[in-house]
Image (tube, rainbow, N blue to C red; front, side, top):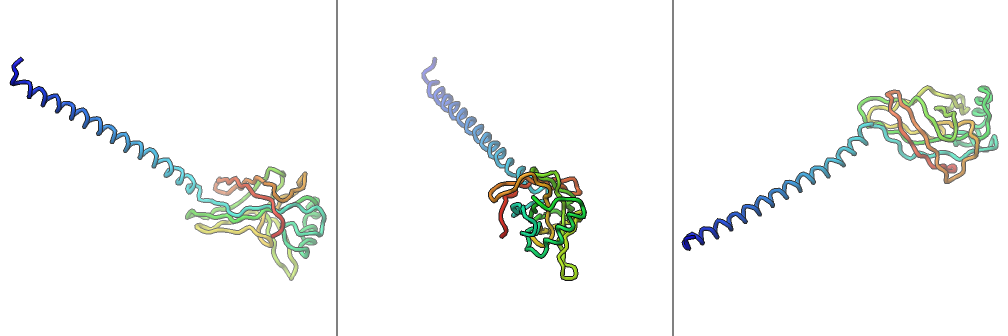
Length: 201
């Protein structure tokens, strides 16, 4: 081999090494970018899934059971409502014992009105949507067919107003327990809700 060609060979070898290193770094950069894109896409999909239903329940709770008639109204209000609620239940052939009510705020983040049409609970087979109103200075409780939740609005289910009645319980509910509720809406959407059992606030 001609001695004068050795420097050229060394230069060519170094250029080859530099080229290989450059290609390796470029490949690593592509992998990092692809990895970053994969990691960022997962949270975005989750956030979209959470917002996609458009219905959110906040501050859900269930009143602990009242075993003695006259102690507290079934929707958690004070004694004056008790006679009306017990009369209404007696007229429908229902027992006035071991009943309770569930309360919450239902938010609708969509541009369409939603309507709550049914509810169920893991502790009873009978859950009804009720409303307490004042008529001629007497509090009355009556079942309602549904509750409309306005577009981009909310409805509060509260004591002395709209609420869910849980009837015919087999066992008393004590503070600290949790009731699993399922809300069904006219659109076909459903919401699973975990509601802690509390005493009257």
